[in-house]
Amino acid sequence: MGPIRTPVYLIDRYTVICKAGYMASARQQLTFDFRDEPQLLDTLRLLAAKRNSTQKAILAEALRAYFAQRQEELALVMAADKSFAEWDNEEDRVYDAL
Image 1 (cartoon, one colour):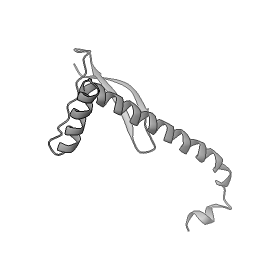
Image 2 (cartoon, rainbow, N blue to C red; image 1 turned 135 degrees about the vertical axis):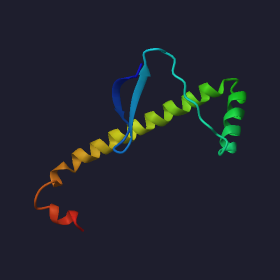
Image 3 (cartoon, rainbow, N blue to C red; image 1 turned 90 degrees about the horizontal axis):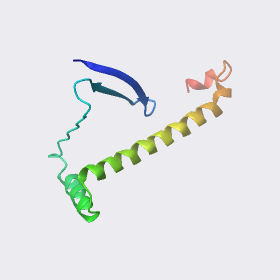
């Protein structure tokens, strides 16, 4: 069966994440090749061992923190856009070309 289209998640103005699932399997698997990042892989392994945790748990925590930060940055950009909306007029368009 083909993928089921699910909602799109806006991360920032330039990045969109779309979840896609398959009816045949509820389990999702994501695989990364870190051969070109040996120091990153070593750091992940050491941190997991130090925390008595799994590499998966460390990566999940890091990804949650990363995307939470991106959402916060997006909220700040959206708030800033609203504050500059008053300058979006014909008189001020002359300055856009500068």
